[in-house]
Length: 231
Image (tube, rainbow, N blue to C red; front, side, top):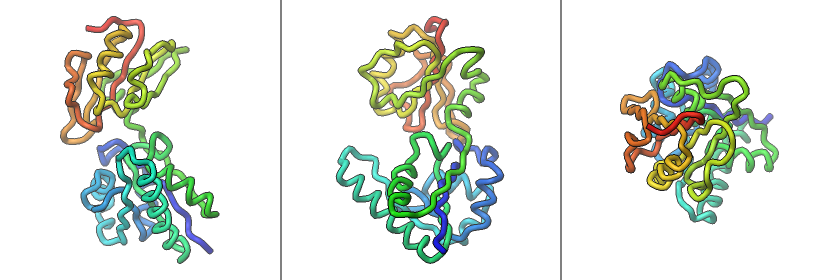
């Protein structure tokens, strides 16, 4: 009997935002996979450790997930990571892979999931609180009301596309192209707010487009709502 690979979302940063199911799965299983070369340094691990301190005594498996544009290298490392996980699954052991936010939204585990499933292994995703939901709550801002649509955009890939669709926007992965993203938002005329490092100790809140620095950190999330002019 082969083990099951779990992609477990640990939420955006605040340990209190971890789900009971995430906590239980970490407690019940001995093999914990963590994105990065050093598990103890990973943000997802630190979140989980605050709630489940006994995680430090478990088998921690580093899975290197490079953030580069060399797709051949990326695929090679994903294959390598999947093989590491499969080595435990073949022993009948479950593997819990920790991931920030939710396990279904721009999640690194998705790449491993496709490989594992293609190889015949069972994968189960465990939802966590998405970063943009946590950011909206931090801003005391309803994301959508009544019949408003919501568009979730990976901004780093969309800086040359105007925001032409009706409704509100969440712009993720903005940091490396923040100047271009801010220009795009200025042209949209929407009301813009943002949270950097949401629910973490280093959290910063920006209440207008002008406040968002061009060098905002990697975990910066922008919410833009229509029907209101930029401050």
